[in-house]
Image 1 (cartoon, rainbow, N blue to C red):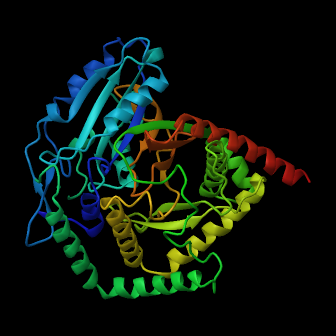
Image 2 (cartoon, helix red, strand yellow):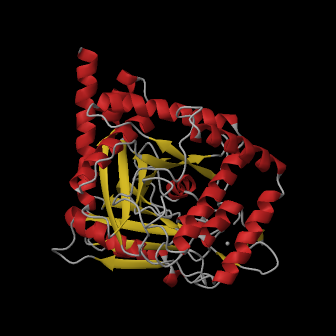
Length: 466
């Protein structure tokens, strides 16, 4: 058995029926030329034959009253993890697919079984099919899940051998009840604090972070680090997380992104966050909300060292202020670049363990507020969460079918009704937007992202022409 890390355990502590803690991906494929219309169903049947399941896909969580929870090996019945669906004609376009996948993403995974599922979705227009997969966030973070997904696909259309992701060795992780009672949650929280207090490196790092936060709060530093729980007044983006889900995407070519990067000496994050900042402000204006302060996002950062490929979670979540209100996208880009440089300085000045601990402590505060039903009244940690997951640079295939798009579908943090994940794949930058069904008109926000990118292109051209 393998003990869970603090971060992995945190996803179980935070989980509820209204706020499941799994991450997913929507993979969209084009059938090979001359392939029969039964291609996707045949693929599903072939998947069911791969009964040798490797860790962590054969593991469940075992809770204990006397020790930290552990992963434990379990039997896997693939019929409970792999499913086939066919969308009906007339309800099989992109919008219908997104609504169907949002419904699949909504329920918790059953903790009595290994915490993953794969759905083959047939019947899409123009000879396409999709695969939606999800796994518990305690198994892996987004970066790890993307890597595992790529390892289970082929590099060319000529490679016809299947290597399903659950058959590959991914490094250790893994029986528990579907729900955790309040008493069990209290015991787990106590175990988290005990673990934290025993690590001097974490304590020193937290002390340094606390000092930085104090200096910012009394305005002795400027934008050194964005403070949690002080984001703009209540907006439609925040509140008590409820169970319904909706999903949409936006996308731009990496060629367009790179042209802006080269002209402005900026990064993908700079460009993407500039577009999101403009789109979110426009969307909020539609809802009658005009923010006079910068939007604050929660931003996960990868804490792995270069080349490290461990399983589980090794991330931190910090708060980042975007741009002060402005009508000029180029000015917005520069403001966000300044904020992100400060974030980089902060990350480089403290240990990874300190960032992990800061993430756990602030997350626990937000989670307690959500458990008590206070997220509609207390300030959120940020207006939304935005993460960036690098994906494969070239097209991948399954049985000769080319994967045309790869969209991330994340989980919602406490008090946030929207989560946005950036994902780069085969020359495209995709924006995956998952939200509760209480957020009005999510597809409109996706369209605003693309329009904000066009506006940024024009603003950059004007600035360099002047």
